[in-house]
Length: 126
Image 1 (spheres, helix red, strand yellow):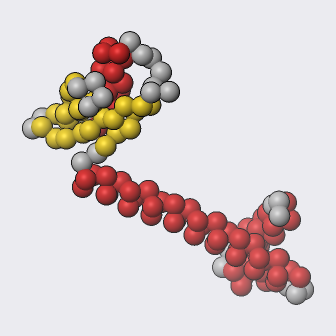
Image 2 (cartoon, one colour):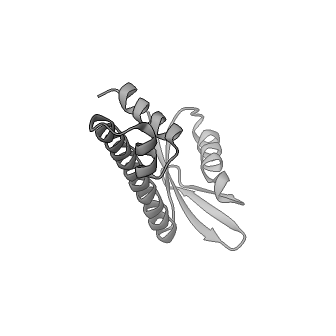
């Protein structure tokens, strides 16, 4: 499959989109339109309807987006580790003989939530 680059720069009231592989430029009024406008231009100029577009944002935007995505991945990973630790704590307390009400109190959740946590540890694949 063919691949095209869409280099984006700001130009007063619009975003300029350069596609070097076809030596053409188009514009978008907002960032949501960048890939669509690039695809439209490529289709018009090449007649292709199936191809990849790699958007190259201005460096400051690219860096900010990368930081945002990395932080989001770290949050998801931390949330999974926290959920696993919560399940481990609940099942360890239960194995030690603690009641569901005690587990809830020690973990700062209702006894109903403690029961849900214990059940999720039982039904979760290893």
